Length: 247
Ligand SMILES: NC(=O)c1ccc[n+]([C@@H]2O[C@H](COP(=O)([O-])OP(=O)(O)OC[C@H]3O[C@@H](n4cnc5c(N)ncnc54)[C@H](O)[C@@H]3O)[C@@H](O)[C@H]2O)c1
Image 1 (cartoon, rainbow, N blue to C red):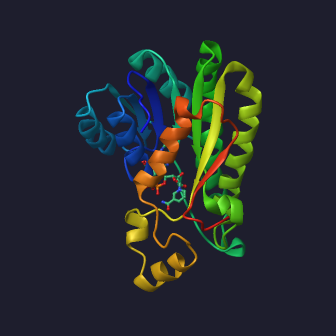
Image 2 (image 1 turned 60 degrees about the vertical axis):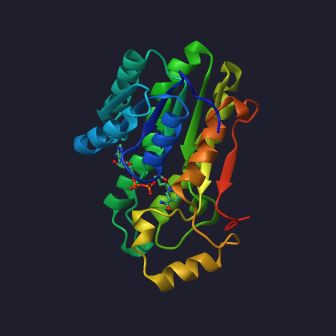
């Protein structure tokens, strides 16, 4: 995997699931980390584990849908780590329902965290990257943002929105040597998918040519690649990590 020795990496939603695996992968590649999530105790627990890799670990409770939280997280991360090289916008939520049953509140909540949160954190980080004329942002979209999914109109719209946001930021900031890409995972093996009934899992796997769910490490490898200098001429790209589910 790419070397991130001495690089300063911010990850949102890093206490569990994909974000936790991302933090471990960047830390084991030598990065200093600034991680945020919604719960202080979960952040402390993650930080204790990540400190074993030897880099600095800054933590902050942040609601990514709040502009002040995003500004202060970036400012504090730069102060604590010294600079900012990579931002991964990973924090995300679901509030699923069929469209006619979905409340306006559930629509607003999911768009606020997933899409507005990605915009606000990117905006805060880009002010730093723009000035230093280097940086890399990786956003976490989803295969459903590309193919649609019944019962998830809010989530799908947020993840499709992230694709448009990624392409636009790539065009706006390319001349400042800031690259902006996204990873679009398919089914990922997490606590959430572990709990699915066996028949539901089997049906989901039928549609996946590689016949397995992604591990969180499969997603981390793709994110680290896009964040690294190995992807130095790649920007505005949406990298599908879906086992062939959507081709
Ligand atoms: N799990 C999958 O199968 C899958 C598939 C495709 C895409 N994704 C995307 O990957 C990302 C991570 O998914 P996961 O399954 O690991 O999620 P998760 O629910 O396990 O973890 C989400 C993390 O985001 C944080 N978070 C939630 N709301 C926040 C807020 N308002 N401000 C700051 N942090 C907040 C939580 O504290 C937690 O650390 C999400 O964007 C998700 O949409 C997941």
